[in-house]
Image (cartoon, rainbow, N blue to C red):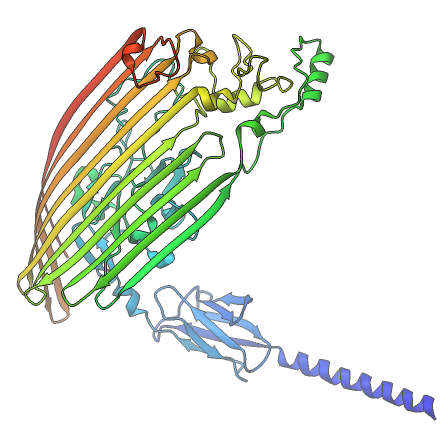
Length: 579
């Protein structure tokens, strides 16, 4: 009797499991439908199951779709660029048609263009925008790195792995054969020259210069936390307002302002580490000995085992601090910020330290008809550069990285006298570059402008913009007389001083009027900008002691070269635009 009862229970359980499985399979079904805007079908609409990104499809050329749902309570999400995201419950319907509404809000968003703003719906040129909420996350990102991969047709490449290194930006490729292909930067209405402070075209390079001439980052003084939006003007109709300067595209950066009724104090801190992603596979000391023995090569065996890549590289610490305060009332709003960044390089001896401060003040009077805007930003960068490459080239064709690849792995770091163990007169010990080749750079940059808008008659606004920029770069480099590279010359020193500034005055008259379903947006302006650029470069060699460095050039046996220059130019423009 007991066995029969157990058998009946097994049959009952099997029957219940079969019914459950059939019930589950019965719930999985196919839903079809069409997506349209009320008139025409929409092609390429994304249809997904809410909460499960793996289940989805897109509409075909006729706006139709097919998707499987697991239950009547499944929510389907319909998304399409320029339209409001729509959600529908599958229910028990086998067919589900959806009408999507245009996202008018996105069309009403304001985009910054040359000497003004414009609604997206009114744009006639190619302009892309990136807002603060869309910025990529990460520590110590520069303004250029925020744009990387965010704009179609804008290619951004890091020139080197050095901390604070510059970047190359090309908007829709290079367009010039023998002139600069850099875009024009405009920060809060003030044009910035990307090549300012480099002095490369005017300063003669010292022979056997083992330090590269990489130009300073033009946006290094701008903290990404201060940026409200980045707009990129790409085509001729969008950039023509800036004349020939806009031929390679225009990158317009708008910084954050204070808001009425908002008081906010923010502090941010980040810390990170950087290390080499990959190192070359080198011969160990034992492998090097074996190769020399097998090939019958002479071996200078120092009895040690070094991977010189590990000796010159390390895990570097990066940290940043950011403090901002904003407040606003009925008539006056302001925002101020301070930032500090300290980035170590993975090459020993490389470091970049920067400070920056920004103040933005907005004030309105005459019931909002008269507005004043003051923007000021100051930044300093202090860096120690590791000589990882030799751009000029020497008779030895050496660099810190190159020596790490070819230097004898069996030799000790130091000789018995405590000096770096060079292989004279051929090879330089890689670690000697850290102490015996010094490259210090200090950059200071100020940018500020004062704007006044007077809406003296309802459709007419008169605008005045006064701007000023100042940039300086001090660079001191020294090759020790105790180093193989400077031994024959008794030590080599190069001193470089570069400075440039610009003054800007703009007068703009704007007209904006609505006529029923039509609107006219026009402007006419006059711009005057004065540029001054100067620099001096001195090279000397032959010192009695390494203690002198660049502090006493008179102690040098020979002043090899002194180069100086000064130049100025003016840019006077008349421009207009009508939409």
